[in-house]
Image 1 (spheres, helix red, strand yellow):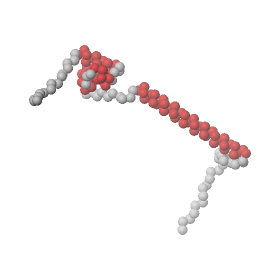
Image 2 (tube, rainbow, N blue to C red):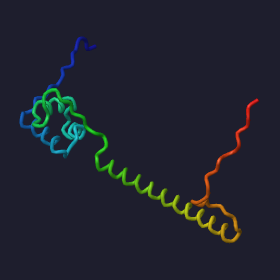
Image 3 (cartoon, helix red, strand yellow):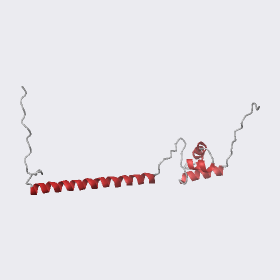
Image 4 (cartoon, one colour):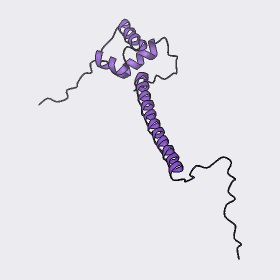
Amino acid sequence: MKANLKTLKKQRNYSEEFKRQIVGDFESGRFSVRQLEKLHGVCNVTIYNWIYKFSTFNEKGSIIVEMKDSSTHKLKEMQARIQELEAIVGRKQITIDYLEKIIDVASDELNIDIKKKSNTPQSTGSKQTKEV
């Protein structure tokens, strides 16, 4: 039976050059912190500490926020949404044209006056009844 055995934590020491290289890869936009973590086997907290320490862009007290979605992904989503909305507007315009054609045919062939003319006097509404 093994009693009182302690496990020792392995502490790695990285060179300053390596740390600056990691920070440079992050600042250039080539890699995210998560990618650097997986690539080099370094904890993300450690990488963030190096960024705060060695970064040329970050000031003391500032917070680094990595966006999940890239701007190109958002741009593609917005372009797809624009195409979808344009298709909807096109279908609505076809419906409007169809209904206007039906109104024209009804007024020509059936002598039904459906369209309101601009010179028609405004309706006065129904007469008001006296409350008793």
